[in-house]
Length: 136
Image 1 (cartoon, rainbow, N blue to C red):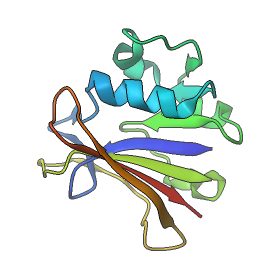
Image 2 (cartoon, rainbow, N blue to C red):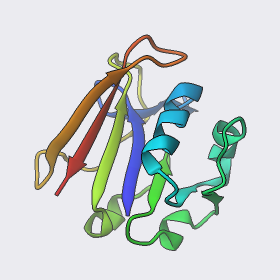
Image 3 (cartoon, rainbow, N blue to C red):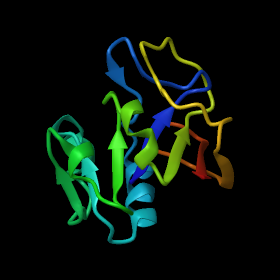
């Protein structure tokens, strides 16, 4: 599986119990990168994908369990550290700022992960979002 997540500079994924991932251009970019592969999401994330041509998006409470090899799991607050052995790639979308966090990305990228790609792009909510692709 491939994990996709939005993080701030402190690796925060949510602050004040709110998601950090509400950016329509970021979601569009993620779906373009997914290129027809299945993107699994929690039902709470469905609102982010409604405005997109998102035919390959599947929502399920147990989306991490349903994802197979090569599938993308868009995580916002889901606990996924126990799936670390199943993760093939990590796609991080960085806001390039720090928010007060209460949910943090649980996997250390310094142990066994290599940065394969790094690209800045303009988002809707942030002038610069950095996409980082990590591989084992």
